[in-house]
Length: 90
Image (cartoon, rainbow, N blue to C red; front, side):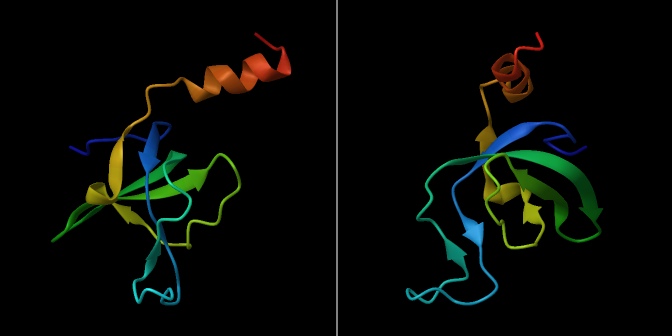
């Protein structure tokens, strides 16, 4: 069973990039902690679960699936509730 499910809000601290950064890695950590929403969960035969993520701030996450190890933790904040509160619908 996957650690996270569709609809969960989680925190990541790196964004995968299609090209190498100046430091020579394939991910960017300059944004710090980013809250993202899990929009799809896939199970692979050999590597476990991976997740399609969506940034709440419109940040490009590199168009890749993130492994469970790439996720720092589940977010403590109910972002759906905060979203609707901002619009005055709750």
